[in-house]
Image 1 (cartoon, rainbow, N blue to C red):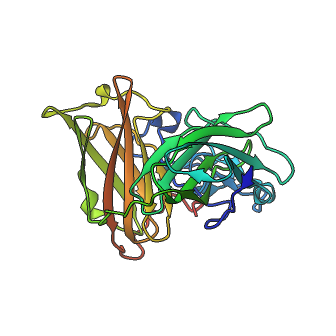
Image 2 (cartoon, helix red, strand yellow):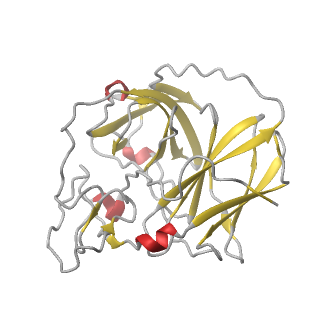
Length: 316
């Protein structure tokens, strides 16, 4: 089998997520943080689901309310993600087996479940026109395997989303080349805020308002046959009402978001987008045991500096 070179992002790229952690009792995602000081100021604590939220021991995540956990930065720095394929040369239209090992440099390490899976694998074509979200299964030797059939020749990006036991979650990105006929991209990257999939019409209501330097609401409505769906119409998919992935067109910045529902929107979340530019977005929801994937394109403008929300002095 052939090891694939990690070409673009480092091992410890932080994943931005929003989730209904601890049942998200405070649905405006502004859970109070405990700011009690502790004796060891050098120890870093981070949210298991939102590693960008850090603080002191006893603090709670400002986004989901989970208690922050100690982060072993030295251990995290030793972790590597290795991907190999069978066959070694990937061909479009043919099934390829992907084997993923998350190691400490010597052997596979143990992973924790996050949203009901120990590993999420997000695959996109380099032009962001094609997307898939799959879940490699753990093997006896500690590696994870899954099969995928890539639709055409060209470059693809593989985002491995995982959480080592006792450490913060991370996302690794690698690029693979797929042999075969290359389809000329028809992506124009113009804003697309309404998607129709499997008879459902999904609208990103505030998609024209996204800016950097502040928290952004993601407000969705979903209709079928002219009737708006309510929270009760959606089934939990991997422990959330929906799953949303955003990837930047230029730098391939990655955000993995887990929405909740509130009284206004059946699918609702907040996120913080750090870089301006064009982003592709995929929203997945489940109704009647069937998974549906809607795609959007949004343009994020540069927001005014100094508008960031400051939930606590411990947040960085």
